Length: 268
Image (tube, rainbow, N blue to C red; front, side):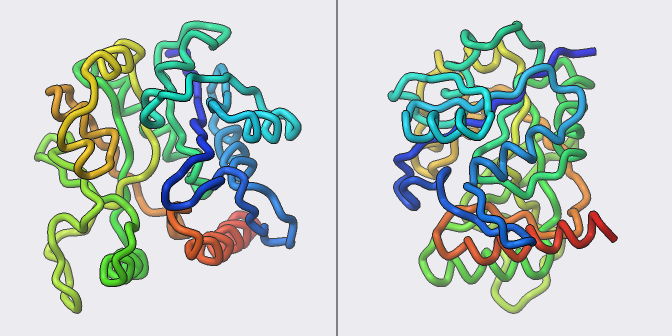
């Protein structure tokens, strides 16, 4: 079996939501935990992971995470995104992994079986540099994306794939385009903040340097496509809750509602 390391990259200086990893979220029982704590709990629920760490360059996040019992690797402050931070964290892992999972720190609603599906997608195809996940957007999630777009806010990310299930493009716009009030001809695939890389692909990513489309969209994964590295997409069934990421402060009550819904479904 492949040796898997799971890394949760976390930074303080988010332009849309400064201090986001430390943002409080109320659980179903009213318990307040930080975003990074909720995401760590999701990470620790994934079976078969040899190592699980938080990668950050910020002492506030590191101290908070360590105090909550998380393993932490400090990374340089000049990492441009979570993928570069995962690459920087490789040297601090206790064992050299075969696969590195990047569970982004703003995805506390991540189901463990989806992480396993992405790992399996990469492990099954030696031609892939990395794999990621997507789910068909529900009507509610699509409406949320359209509402964000209409208000000038950046919401979730969507992806289109070729017939072989590899990514053609990722965008913060809704792709394919869906006119408001219409039903899409095919499901809009909501990209999930989750990646599984081969270590060599992480090194190649850093060596390639930023790509124009990556900078234009603000999406780190586009550097792989620009460099001609194939990205497999595991299209997973949507869970019984909406996979909303914490992109803006206004997302907080939406995520809290989904945390409650997930707890209700898991105890039913």
